[in-house]
Length: 343
Image (cartoon, rainbow, N blue to C red; front, side):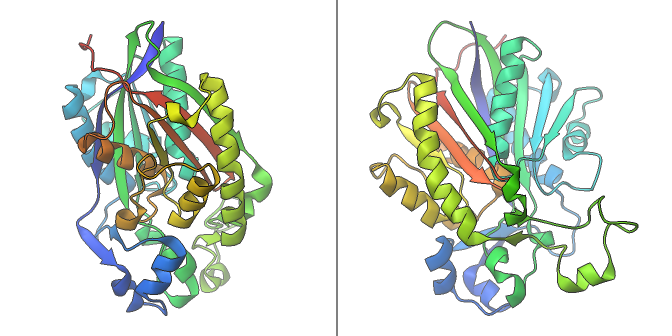
């Protein structure tokens, strides 16, 4: 049976460190205010005045992941690029990354699932691999939020949350009957909540300019969020989702899961989720304190960290889950295996 295994991971964040105190100089906020509401202490943003896009951060993370996998870019059969902050309106950042990797015809797919980008991407990569359409897939989550934030008091509720960063995972098809690799995935969406977390403009539905001076004056080109609703949806849906995907994977107890990596949207959401399911300390991993919310990059970035720290070993089972704009929510269960000889 064909299974999808992780061969290598990599992460990259820009060098510009932005603390809560740094933000307090730009808006009416404070380190205490941000920590109490989000758990965030700092984040990394791309340099001011430059032209660094999501594909640039994704490139750096991909190089690390490919090196750890022992692959060359030309070994790839497929690239999946998850982002809500593409370099340009079109074409997709996956094609830009493909070119920067020196490739000429490798297919690239962009997915716009925001906070669940990695979860949807892993499910998609697994489907491609299991169907035989690809054997080696590069899955990238990368975001440059900082260039699109309203860094004033008007936009502080959103601006303090987001960071820039990227992470990449090399996935390979392996023939084995062992219960390893991606064991299960579940994906959901409910578009009626789209306006609860969205960036309105520029947009094709706005004619003739796609954005107007009035919209710019009103700040409608910055992301907006109904934080209370998103919080409520997350703390309700994520515990339910955990039980649903465990059943699909054939797991009967949380004791069978060694590591839980939730999307890093808000530390308070993850703590509420942990308390609801009575998850013991040490089983759930959070790093939003250091990076903020890097959206599609948060889960693979955290995964790369735990592998580096030796906290995710052969035989361990991990749960990845999250909820975000769309709204979308979903989860994957993955069992770590010994790295087998490459083809």
